[in-house]
Image (cartoon, rainbow, N blue to C red; front, side, top):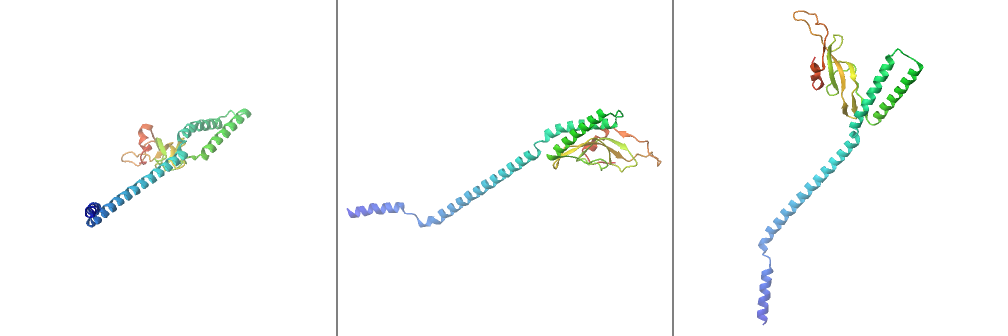
Length: 208
């Protein structure tokens, strides 16, 4: 009876026993699996960090540049106020009533510009500057021997930036060197190019 009991116990022990020869292989497999899980965890953490940073950038851009469309609409109002002031200043019909009206319009224009500046909207300085396709759009090119080629001669519509981005390009008239008649040193009479002739200056480097 005892012999039979021992035999059953021995068989159970033999069945549950682990072959010592398989231990290194099992340990290596566990290490590989652990390394793979660790790599997957690192990739997941890196991806989560990238998503967080992208969300932060998007939120920052929304705060800084979210008013772009609204600011462009306000610029139309600023343009109209500036035209009104310029027309009133050129008018010869001066009176106390007109002077008071002009002063009110000027005050309104200053308030608009100060409000826009508080939100990062600032005018682009262009008069007398070299043409820059990043900030300028050429409406016409005029022969002018008195100015260096590619100089902004006239600002038709003021340009503005929103912080470090262009909000609206300045629409300008640009100078160029007068063409000379073949075989002579005399320049051809001054001429101006139309918007269609000079449209390329709006997107490319100025080429006098």
